[in-house]
Amino acid sequence: MIEATRRSRSLQGEQREQEKPDLELWRGSDCQLWAHAAERRVAVRVARCFPWSEPGRHLSLRDADDDEVAWVTDIALLTPASRRALALSLLEVGFVFEVEAVTQVEEEIEIRFFRVRTRQGWRSFQTHRDEWPREMPGGALLIRDVVGDLYYVRAPEELDPKSRKLLWAFMD
Image (cartoon, rainbow, N blue to C red):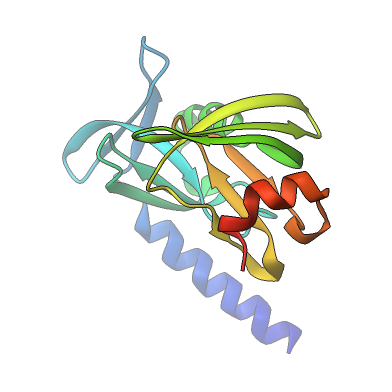
């Protein structure tokens, strides 16, 4: 079983190496991550995909319209220059706030305003009104704000009564 897994990983690695020969990444003078892929040069942002336990793998590079420009299976397979540019961008997007309490949720015309206490301190953020928290395996909630920051509610049912009341519309 272990040998089969090793062989499978080895084959997957060979396939991944063939996936990215034409992808080039760099940071522009505007500090934006840029990609040259499929004969297209475009500013991109990094979207980390699950599992989060492998932060250098499964990365979607998206343009301003949120369309995927390139998929990076493993950052280690990129050229050193591309790897450095992507690693710097990952530092900027790799942070997830863990919500401990919700003190305010207000809806306006196009946005929802949140005031929360996180493990990292107090935060205020906004989401688009049509952007609902995603329910994760085990009942956790993941909220993405308008600038792309992530807020993770590990166990909504264990929050204080006020927090649960404010989040009731997002929970089953």
